[in-house]
Image 1: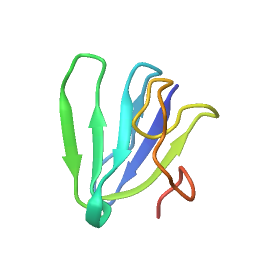
Image 2 (image 1 turned 180 degrees about the vertical axis):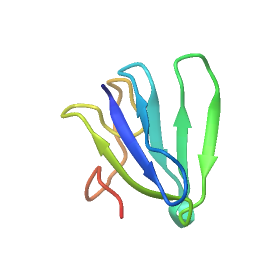
Image 3 (image 1 turned 90 degrees about the vertical axis):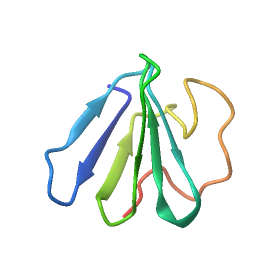
Amino acid sequence: MGFKVTYTNSPATQHGDQDAYEFLDRGILKITESTGKTSYFVMDFWNSLIADPGHEPSGRGGPAPDVLDTVAE
């Protein structure tokens, strides 16, 4: 597993090592799947993101932006 996202009114989703996530302005979560599909979630829709060690934001092993933590609440 690369990371898991929990949502306010929807089931949690699991994402693989080849998927990427990024925290954008105003709490928007961007998820890019290995297929190229990109989804955006506003802050009130998603609750948390828990990533495996080494699976940093915006990356499939690439450089990460400055973040305090990979778990958002």
